Every structure is written in structure tokens, then in C-alpha cells.
Image 1 (tube, rainbow, N blue to C red):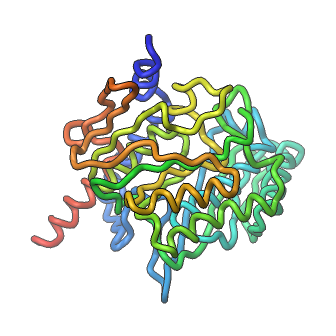
Image 2: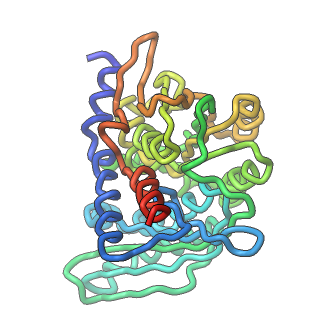
Amino acid sequence: MNRLDAVAHAARSADGIAGKTEIAAVMDTLRAHGADPGAIRIGDDCAAIADGDGWLLFAIEGFVKRFVACMPWFAGYCGVMVNISDIAAMGGRASAVVDAVWSRDMAHARPIVEGMAAAARAYGVPIVGGHSNAHSDDEQLSVAIIGRARQLLTSFDARPGDILVAAIDLRGRYREPLPNWDASTEAPAPRLRADLELLPELAEAGLCRAAKDISMGGLVGTAMMLAESSRVGAVIDIARVPRPDVAEPARWLCETFPSFGFLLAVAAEDVAAVTARFSARGIACAAIGHCDDSLRLRLREAGAEREIRDFRTHPYIACASRQAVADSESSHA
């Protein structure tokens, strides 16, 4: 199997990509019981609530028990870190986090809490409250965050003709056996904070239309969510994606969750300015593809192409299309 076929196979079978399809089922259930997201569009990294001259950002992350059991300290660290990345992906700055920790006893809770505290110190975002239970059958973790954005980046504003840009900090290592790429825990705190500041700066400078942080589905799964939410198609040249030499391409593109990794939709005339800002901070950044009006995601390499998903016939998270239907039904009620 050549590299393109290996990546295409992983894109169709990786657990992290397949798991995202459950989002639509959750939203359908909520709507069936009268939940109304109102003006909050579903499918973004955070809820963005209009608030004065900006937006209040609100998000939450839950962590699978296998991760928490395998790496309790790092799971706690990630609880804060990935939430902060969600805020940054929306063009915002994080304000505070709260947590919920379940454990068998305080001895098992301690490394989780210590990991959260370490990340809060590194990123300068305080933990202001939460909930704990030391009488559970095992360890579980959930962390929520609030932040603010002056100028919003969303998952819904990519347009045909936009260039897809990937910005990933390669100065790290895998946390084996899990596909987490850690470029954070050993990095200087001032650098971590300044790196994240790039996202709201891009938003406020008008240099980026849409963005998502690269999550459990890897870059390919993230591209599917961004494209479907914006109701566009996308083409990715897998050879252009920044990748460390130690990372196997299929794993990197379809499974890896980087501590700092963002996919941006950028107008062609702004690509040079965007890549220069990341490069100036030592972050690998490259144009990796483009958006079109096909409503399909395709991967390319050396003139060959593989279609991964046609959103018209096989919706992915499907939130954008369901929201459009709901809005249409509401307007005709």
C-alpha cells in the first residue's frame, strides 16, 4: 500500500475520526426534547455568545477513562491545555477553568489535579472551582472553560478558494502508547502563552476566516469538520502537511492530537502574512490545500487523489446541515 492509500484507509477507519459522527446524534436527541441552541451554531470548538462588543466563549472537554488511567498527570494537564486551545481556535483568550474529578480515593486524584495545576501555571489561566468525588469506581475527568473574543473565528466561514493552512508545533514527542503529540509540558511558559496569542491576533487583524484546533481525529478529521460546517469541499496535499520525521504519515494525519495544532482557512492574499507569523515563533506552518464548492473531502499526493467523504451523501458531524434544516423549518412555521 502506498502512502496516499495508507492515509486514505486510516481516514476511513480511525476511531478518532469515526467517533465524531456521534455529535449529530446527540444534537438530534436534544432537539427532539425541545432544546433550542438559538443563535449558537453547533459544530464549533466553543459556544460563542454575543456579549457587548465581543463574544463570551464557553467549552468543555471530557476524557476517556483509558487515557486518565494510563496517564493521570498528563490527562489533567491536557484537561486545561486542550480547552485553552479551543478558546484560541475561536480567536479568543482564555479566562478561567473549572473541573470535575472522580476517583477511588485522594491518592488517585492527586496526580490528575497536579497535572491540571501545572497546565494552569504554564498557560496563566486559573482554576477557579469545580467538583470532586473520591468514592468512585475509577478515575474520570471533565474540564470546562470560559474566555472572550473581540473578533471571532468560526468553523462556518471558510469559502471556496480559501487556502487551508496548518500550523503545528513539531518541537515535541509522542506520549506513547497514545497518539498525543506533546510539545507543551517541557516548553517555557512564556513561549506557550505567546504562541497561543497568535490566534486572536490573526482574528483581530482580519487575516483568517475560519479555524479549528486539530483534535482526536487528527488533521484529516478536523478538516472534515471544518469543511462540512462551512458547507464547502476541501483538498489536502498530504506531502505538504508539517510532520516530524518520527511520525508515520497515516498516524500523524488521522490520529495525532498535537498540543499546538490549528487548521486555518485563509484568503489567498493573506497566506504569506499568516505563515510568516507562525514561522517567526518557530512553529511549522504551511499551505496544505484549498477549499472548493464540491462538498467533498479529497486527499492528494503526486498527482493521485482519493476521495474520503462526500458530505452530500455521507454527512460527518452533520450539525451545519441539520441547523440549516431547523432554521428553514422555523422560518416557515
